[in-house]
Every structure is written in structure tokens, then in C-alpha cells.
Length: 273
Image 1 (cartoon, rainbow, N blue to C red):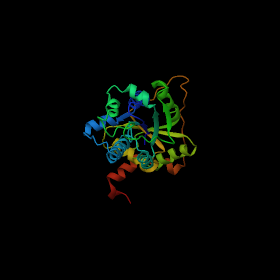
Image 2 (cartoon, helix red, strand yellow):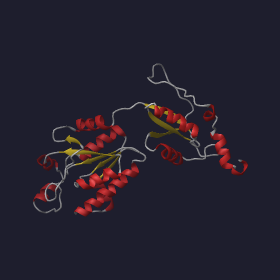
Image 3 (cartoon, rainbow, N blue to C red):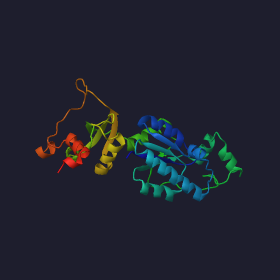
């Protein structure tokens, strides 16, 4: 499961601006609360309406996070609901975009704060409705940091580069031999990335990418990073590339496991004992 970066803060604090710049660095999907409200035509800003909206966005983010990192940019003023979301979805990381009210009002090109102060808009967070700040989140002072500095703070805390041991294969299907290889590397305390070759579905490749991802999820959960790559022919490299090719040997009975034999048995169950 990929991370969900949940940006919370007052209206016009800089959440969407930070989200757009951060997405360029981590190739993430952005879920902007205001845009979602427009799409689903939801203008219920009551406490219960906000709660339902926050939970709906969280569910959407979780579904997207199965395939890509997600950035949520949402005022989400109710702390208890944010805490509920973090408990339900452990891959949610809360980031408090903290900006003083005066600066938020100055940035407000839509004039919403002005209308709220005049009483023309009710249930407006920061004016007529409270904002409950986090107590244990990464805090970004967007009124003193620029966008690049704000993004770098998130990257440094949650997206520091990691080195992986990679397994490339078709995994048609994932079997005990594959599992033993991967567990051996995990037991060494290393990060593992599995690159699924995107092969056409045929007799030798009966399982789709989605089915193969699910095989890995059932065995390894979130402990292994899964990516999809084209159906490669060669792995080419030059001098001093900074990584090596490593052969891992297992017990002979494990190495004897054959995906071809497994597929044959699956296709002809009556011929096996």
C-alpha cells in the first residue's frame, strides 16, 4: 500500500499549492477537497456534513493508494474524524499546513473570508466554524516557508530514498520457491521491490497483473513494494552502476519447484495424484 499524505489546515493556507508541487516529486494522485465537492455537488458544511465528506475522501484515497501515492488537500477541521481516519487507514500521514489567519485572508483571491466576516457565508472554518489543529502531525509553517521548502520538509520526513533488492519476474503463479527467495532477503533486513513483467495473457501467462498483485498482497501484505514493468528482453548496464546482480541459492527441493509444472497441474487437475 502506498502512502496517503493528508494535508490539513485553514482555507487558503497553501494545501493545494503544496500538493501540486509535491505530486511532481512522488508521482502522486491529488484529491482536492474543494474539487471533489464540486464534482459530487455537495455543499453541506455542517459538522455532520463535513464528517461524511472527510470519510468519503479517505475511502477514495485508500482505493487510489493501492496503485499510487495519494495527496489529500482538505481543510478537514475536525480532529476526531482525522484521528478516526488515521486509525482506519494506517498508511495515512497527517501534515498540518499552519498559516496565520491574517495571511490566509490576504491570499484569498475568491473573497470567501471577506464574505464570511460579513456574515454572507456561514459555517466557514476559521471564522464562524472552528478549526481543530493536530497535536502530533508534521507541521509546516506555510506563512514563513516557501513552497519548495514546504515540499522538501515532507520529502525529508516521509520520502527519504531507500535502496531495494529487486526481483523481476512473471510469477505465473507466485509459488513457494519465489516466496522463499523473497523471505530470505526480507529476513536480512532489506527492502524488497518486486517488478512484475507485464506479459500478454496466454497459456504460459494465465494471470493478469491485478491477480498477481493480489497473490503478493495475500502473502506479504505491505512488506514488499510491487511495481509493474514492460515485458523486458534484456537488462543492460555499464560500468560502476552502483548496484550488483546477486544469485540466491535455496534448498534443492525448493529450487525444484516449477511454475510450468504448477500451471500444468492447474490446467489438468485429473492427471495429478
